[in-house]
Image (cartoon, rainbow, N blue to C red):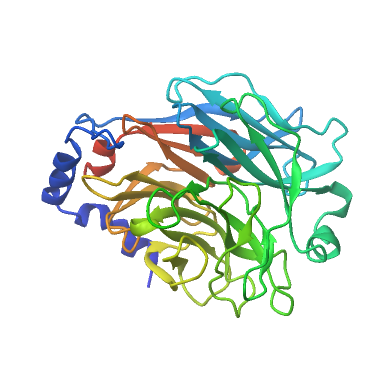
Length: 399
């Protein structure tokens, strides 16, 4: 069965009546708790530059993370690679936009490397609203160690990530400190640093205020590679971290890169890149206790399994629950597509292509309902650009 063809008409199969009802319900004026009023006029803008590669200078930007802060500032984070390779010398940089991604301020160095002797694998960014700070996680190791570092250092010390913080909405960043999360009850260890995306601060349920980030986890006797996908969480404003539940614990490298979102009741839904299960779809797991354990795991049968990370965020809680996910929909990291779920990520009935190209991405939502997607166009050869669109465009049937 050609799964791409099976999915190709999904958007058109969503009835115009359903789309109209959804837009009508979202046009309700937002409550004081942060609801969103939908713009009735569809619009789409793509290819807006954020970070631009300079091949002559060997400046290559990869793996975007995107966050809209409580003040409305858009923060875009990227690796700056001195060469196109995964293990090239790397720095971490960000840019800020105070007008919804239309224009961007100067590039800000988060972690510099003037001598170009270190790799830095970026992880998630998250806002800790109660403490008024941004938190960014990453791995840092000598370039000449390359992949060996994971076996020689990372596994032997019990994992661990670097944590840097900003208390001025991303304008400056603290000197990083090493954090080694506490292993979970099943002996899984690790670090919050499995490529791009953003974490969440839980808003509902008994774990309200908890920070949850995606993670790179391992367990002796199971993991033989650079680790697999899981999550970490913090209940003390990011001062310490713990490893959460790990799906498919008996297998090495099933689930790797991931994105996550809070779902009803303070639960967590995590969507994974599939690295080996005999399936043509992506993988997922759910946690009913804010990330501590796995309550459900399985195959996400209505999403294509592109070998690439995805971006995910919540669009709204009320008057309708909507979660957005962005990723390539065809092989070769082509056809960057936005999917929508109305049942906490259980099904993804709406999909619309944003651009014919586009690989790694992350997605965020402005207070006015505008959707932002930072992505890598043209096989990551150009850098990182932005798409801006609204829910009306997403729900409009493709012609």
